[in-house]
Amino acid sequence: MPKLKTKSGAKKRFGRTASGKIKAANAHKRHLLINKSKRGKRNAKGTVTLQPGDAKLVLAYMPYMRG
Image (cartoon, rainbow, N blue to C red):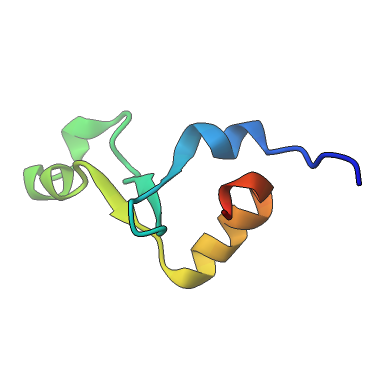
């Protein structure tokens, strides 16, 4: 079987937790921050664990992240 390619955009954006879940950064923190509330910006810090349906889509883009 030929090797499968990983989507290069996905490998930069997603990672795995120790328990095997998919983690990603929160959105809406890059620009136009003056219009956003302090509370919203504060809540968008750090990373978030993806829901199972979203994680399934990410794993389709990253075939070698499954194991």
